[in-house]
Image (cartoon, rainbow, N blue to C red; front, side):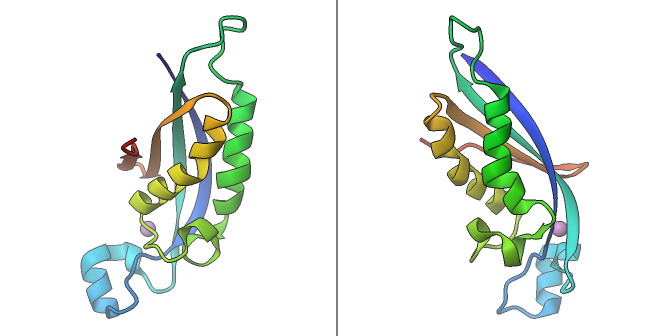
Length: 138
Ligand code: NI
């Protein structure tokens, strides 16, 4: 089994909060990420797919195809956007890195499936020290 990982970067704004909570309560739970006036992160997205390489080419998947799928369905929809307000696949969700990783999985999964590889993990690095990794139970 081959595992192939592609990295893409995007920056985006968000606010972590529950609407029914006061600013104080939101700060208590979400810390600085609850700032009512938004803030941004420089995110790194690592998408890993798995499968067996094609014996004729030695390749698991064309990396240009991987890049195109990530750009078209994820990066172009997130980069320089406000995750809370502008990203359709995050509507109604708290804009956490955890929720973002799960949402990105659901967006990407069918596109890789149609190319004959399985999505393996989604990792999002929100800052130098914080990385979220997601694998959907299938
Ligand atoms: Ni934040």
